[in-house]
Image (cartoon, rainbow, N blue to C red; front, side, top):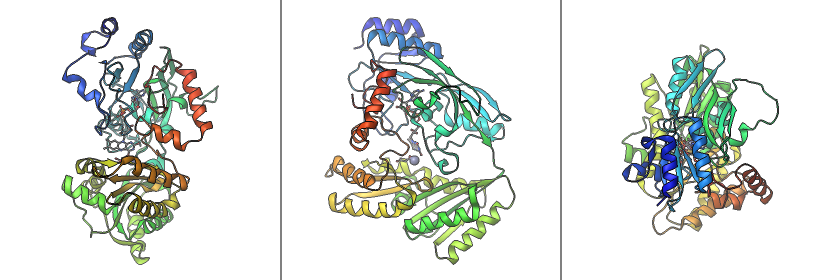
Amino acid sequence: MMPRDLLERLTGLLGPAAVLAEGPDLEPYAVDWRKLFPGKPACVVRPSSAEQVAGIVRICREAGAAIVPQGGNTGLAGGAVPDASGTQVVLSLNRMAAIRNVDPVGLTLEAEAGCILKVAQDAAAAAGRLLPISLAAEGSATIGGVVAANAGGVNVLRYGMTRSLVLGLEVVLPDGTIANGLRRLRKDNAGYDWKQLFIGSEGTLGIVTAAILRLLPRPKHSVTALLSVVDPAAALRLLELAQDELGDQISAFELISATSMQLVAKHAGLKTPIAEGEWFVLIEAASSLAGLREAAEAMLGMAFEREIALDGVIAESGAQAAQLWALREHVTESEAREGKSVKHDVSVPLTEVPRFLHEAGEALAAGAPGTRVNAFGHLGDGNIHYNVLVDHGHDPNVVNRIVHDMVAAFGGSISAEHGIGQYRVGELARYRASTEMELARRLKRALDPESLLNPGKVLLP
Ligand code: FAD
Ligand code: MLT
Ligand code: ZN
């Protein structure tokens, strides 16, 4: 039970409607999307301004109550939910959801942290511009969450991670200070670029209350194709051909295994329109110049001539493109419906992906027989979701160790885009050099010496 005076002070600051103290209303804020980390909030607070966020931080700091910032709670590393102690305050940004400004000439969009990513994408599109952060959770994920997680998604190979799209941030620090860096400048070398510290810090260093994001001109034409290939090595040859023929117009290059497609068919009832295969590649290219479709058709022809692709289709309409994308976007949910999986959001050097997939498969067959691999992801940037379907007879720690040791052997990362949260906090300490971990702890101590923000996430307590 949270201390009465803390509840009274928070209610006094925010009003009773913005403080959830008990009952079923708390549930959506208490458990992560994967239902791996059932937490117990002391309460949930829903501020409507940066000033209110700052007031909450000051009150909680005086009361010694930790704060867990939460956006859309779609994170896959358990970073946005409290522990089970009943002492942590969940601070939801979902009432701070305004789009403040869209500048189609200066190519900027300013939004509050709780703004849903899809709403921001649509605001950019309405102005004829593109906000190229695209992930299957975009209907619930928030601007603050994608900044705090430095989210990746399907367009990274062309536009970079969220980090590369952030121009300015407003952040409430663990002492209640509001740091306002909401500048729309493309170039600003005046002093430390401190916003970088908060991008990808997963709510452990500061609370993002607003952001200014960089927009791109919206390409007039796009083309989407689904091809089947014999193996990941052929998928890489297809990437090379696509780069030769479509250049930097490629905006997505997704690898999808047969297992992924079987799960989507089983749980979402969606089937691929091309002949069955072992591996599939979904390619999207976009450009404002004419001739994109012709170039894509020529590329497809070459892929067949050179026996790189077994089968393939180019979407004839926006609706058909959406059908092809639905196959990819339903993989995560279909996997969740299939049962327990040990997720690995890994990246290895791009050209090593085929060998990694092979070696990791061999190691799992030897070390964790009976597991099934659901491999898919953003091949174009070397990020594979190497998710291992397990049953009660498998030890997730054994599976984790096999896969992450293999990632380390390939010089890869154990978290390409989902972050560490609480899900991988032990793994980070194991695979990152002690000097890097000590530097991270120093930064945490400098900004949040009382470990007020999101304790237990990213860094071991
Ligand atoms: P939350 O889950 O609420 O929070 C995420 C982290 O950020 C937590 O540590 C939280 O404490 C912190 N946080 C949230 N808001 C703030 C704030 N305002 N200030 C400070 N800290 C904050 N991710 C990818 O990168 N690429 C993908 O392709 C992808 N696909 C997904 C598909 C599905 C179906 C699902 C369910 C998730 C997927 N994700 C993906 C993961 C998730 O959508 C992203 O991590 C997203 O950025 C989380 O946004 P959110 O608003 O839900 O954040
Ligand atoms: C996605 O790309 O769909 C998610 O990041 C992957 C996952 O669910 O593991
Ligand atoms: Zn992903």
